Structure formats: structure tokens, C-alpha cells
Amino acid sequence: MFLLRLLLKNAFRHKLRTLLTLVGLVVAICAFGLLRTIIDAWYAGVEGSSSTRLITRNSISLTFPLPLNYAQRLRAVEGVNGVSWANWFGGVYITERNFFPQFAVEPASYLALYPEYRLDEAERLAFLRDRQGAIVGRKLADKFGWKVGDTIPLRGTIYPGTWSFTLRGIWDGAEAKTDESQLLFHWSFLNESVRQRYPGRADAVGVYLIGIADPQRAALVSQQVDALFANSLAETLTETESAFQLSFVSMSETILVAIQAVSLIIIVIIMAVMANTMTMTARERLAEYATLKALGFSPFFVVQLLFGESLLIALTGGLLGLVLTLPLAAAFARAAGTLFPVFQVSPLTQALQLLAALVVGVVAAAWPAWRMSRVSIVRGLRHVA
Image (cartoon, rainbow, N blue to C red):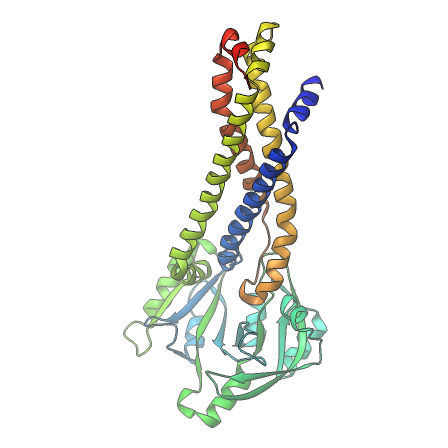
């Protein structure tokens, strides 16, 4: 208790300097946490993927479709227990700023493959019965204030025209990492319109989604699927859902590396600031530390004072930064809208924030503590602050 009181008095002896150091620590820890959360949000699709789902697309590019008649042959592959399909729609809601993913799906089989979409049974049945119906995630519905029964107009880009959908249900994610920012509607509704307007583009799907019984056989099933359509007019590339998501993340790998580098540089900078503060503190108190030694206190006690003061300031700034990160992340998520479907400060990020504060406190005090523990009593008493 005596040591704690002494540390508190020492830490706030120069209130302005300590306050400015704390502000720097809070800003650095907040920035570190937000940048780490942005990286986590970029990988949210990978983290939220299932090991029991495979994605089959055209081997040339995702922009090339696959024939609808592949579905029946996929169901016959050993190890496959479910097949569905989806097309990217790419519509615009009111303005281009209101971007969110929209997919035309085969509703019954698609929802069976995504049990993490928690949808009320009555709403699910209403969606299945209404060919012009749609369902959306809770986050998307909250953003635009949609309610069940509302009409959602979309201006087509890939599929020109104005498309109107009736909202039949709103799903909640089973976990925090479940994407709640999508709109799903009937593939048959889209295909029927395409057949009338552009017959050559009908009966084609963007990707097939395959459910497998044993995740350990994912590679084998993928090979079997691709071998099934080898040398055809539309060869396939089948991969796990996580690998499919990673293919999109890899396009931004340079940006992610830069963000990671910036987050570490911020910590290094505040570490230098903190080290300068502790060095100034030790130099000003040289005579005091010499007096303590003259009174019989060991060099280790002096080391305790410096490390304790540094850790007290660093952890205080770290805790304040951690607490402030949560509302800032929530505000950022609201501002980003559907750009990041999942944007939450993870427990790992919070632990890294505290660890960073701890490392800053230890490193900042290391040099001045070593110097003060070795200073002679005579030299210390001669020092004039």
C-alpha cells in the first residue's frame, strides 16, 4: 500500500506532463485497436465461413456463368449432401452510396446450407411462397429502417430495369461474425425475367454452393467435382468457402500489410514518447534516488519505483484507450454502413491493446531504471535538478 501511494504521488507530480503522456497513450491505443479491428473486419468473411460448404465457380473467372443443369450432376457426387446456387445481382437502392450485397438464390436449398441465418419460420414460409419476396439481414434492415411487408426497389446494373421486392423476412445471425448485411431473393424470379429479355443469358448461375457431410473430405470432393466437368465448355474450380473468401481478401493484401505496419509504428512512436518521459523523470529525481540509497533502500527499490510509475501510467492510458475504442468502433461501424458487414472489437484485439500498453510501460522504464540503479550516492547527492 505504501509503494502504491508513492507511485501515485510520483506519477502525478508533474500533472501536465503526465496528462499529455496519457492523452498520447489513449490516442495510440485507440488507433491501434481500430486498425486491428479493420483488419479483422476484412477477414470477417473468412472467419464466418463454414467448413461444410464448398463454392464451385467457372474456372476462367467468377464473371463467367455456369449452366443450371450442372446442379443435378453435382448432387450425384459422393459426399455431397446439398446443392444450391446464387447469382450476384448488383442493384442500386436509391443511390450508389447505398451499397450492399444482393444475391438471387434458390431459396429452400440455400437456407438449408446456411443454418446460421436465424429466420422466423413464418417469415421463411412467406419468403418461399412469394416469388417476388426477399429477405435481408438485421443490420441491413436497421440501417434503412425496413420492416416486413415493405417494398424494396432496386435499379438493376447487371440486369437493367427497375426491380421491386417485397420484404418477407429479416434474419439474425447465430453469431456476431455472421453477415447480416445481405439481401436474398428468388433466382427463379430473376431467371424468368432474363429469359424474356435476354434468352441467351437464361438458365445460368454465378456459383454453386455445395454442402458436404465430412469437412475432412473437402479436398477430395472438390477434385471429384472439377474432374466431372473437365474438358467441358464450362470447366469448374471448386474450393472451400474460406478459400473462396480469401481470394477476395488477397486482392487487398498490400493495403492490409500497410495497415498492420501503421498500427505497429504507432506503438513504437508512443513507446519513444513514454521513454522520453521516464528518462526526464529519472533525471529530475536523481538526488532523491541517491537519498533513498543513502537511507538504506536497495537499488531494486529504485527500480521498482521507476517500473511501477511507468507501468501505472501506461496501463492507465491503455485501459482508457481500450474503453474508448468500443464506442469509437461502434461509431465507425455506423459510418461505414455495409462496407464492413462485421465490425466489432474482438477479445484478441482488446488483449493486444493491453499487451501493447504493458510493453510500452516496461520498455520505457528499462533504460532509466538501469541507470538509476547503478548511480552512486555521491554523484546523486551532487546533482542539482
